[in-house]
Length: 621
Ligand code: GLU
Image (tube, rainbow, N blue to C red; front, side, top):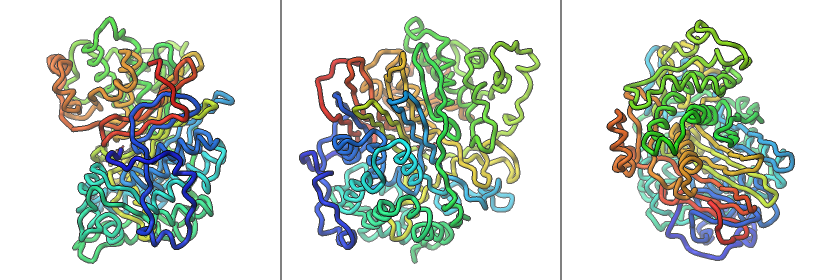
């Protein structure tokens, strides 16, 4: 992510001694953490990592070199990102980790999504009968969910890792304490949030040190509060976060957002309690699994819609032959398949502990065939398309479905909730593998860029505003799959994905970008698997995203809109909105000779960092 960095030798992670106590508050005396040069592609053996930030990737690689496994490396990288990419992710948020364990060839997911406080209700985003405006919800205690990150890390490490939090947090402690050089991306992220950060004394103090202005490019950004928090967690485990002083600080911050003296307005408090924190649990869940043209695809299940929507879209696309159709006609089907998949995802996918998500039906090949009937081969749908009826496919595939079954109205699709529309510049994705062949594909987030905008005073991390991923019902009490309820987790779009062929890993990947995450992963898979683009090219290619929004338009990058394909698609009725950049994918491609290629986004968000433990010349795709 951050270019223009000081180039230094590898090995900083294990050679810099661990500092404690006063060092945190005297951070100015320490020199910033040096980094190696950032490259978006690296091929080799013995393990690999890719993230948006060179320091995070370096931390993962050093853990791998020191004998740690892919899970240890992923947590180490995510913790560093919590310091360097703290507007996108961190311990005030949550995530979804998909793990492939080579030893028993199992895919497991560690879901550590934020949870609505138990005092929440379906009227969470209403003041009386009036919906609270989005900007007020975004920057408030109301939208802060109970953070899942630290629990997720601890569960992943204790069950599937080889190191404890005390070890894997050390690189992050050093980065937070010693600081790093502010680059253009970080400067822009801060600048976009000045008005929000100014409202809170804690946020202004950390992010606007220069009389209310962001630290300029080249300044050193240190976060001793975060170093202190990480150190407490390293020493005391998740208990130190979910109980005691940090928990009290979180609850107090949600209940009494620390307004700056000149804020001139109050923001809405939330309803999180100490027992919401102490009772929080990460969940080990089954992945969702499907096949695509001989590949096996594993993804994240509910409460993320990522895996389900991706696999449903792939199932629809499997009915078309990309080479015979050619790029434009296949791209048309990609957009329409995505539109149909999003209609279903929005209607049916939510927290599975609150809603019966019809996963079997949604991912049945027969259902995909049924949905394909709604796809017009030469014409874009003009507006929003309705959800299908996957419940009719929840049954044994040998059952013959009557017309009545197919046409019966699924109860949940009847309501049309309005999703909260937050811009998509946030979240981050980490991909790692180790010498034993374990793999981690891990997306984590605090939701909006800068989350709720509120730093927990003295602890150096931002509270998420992930509860904005709930749908707002048309009236306060109305039921829908994804409305807020006590203890419920909001639907996500995060889509950490694994692809196998004949039992061997082929790809691990994921991206930030709100609901465009799903289309970014989908488009990259198509580029690589169907059109044979090398992975780096597949990742760099201009993006277009169709998510069944009411006006029927697709969001696209300017380079896509300027392409001949876009002109041909416009002739088929597609309309594109220029949204600048979409996503920032990272991934790992596994080759048949045992080497791997780590890939990070080459340009978007300033470009990411891919590294391997033992570099070798690249031979495969
Ligand atoms: N909150 C989003 C989700 O869970 C991710 C945030 C983003 O990438 O914009 O899907």
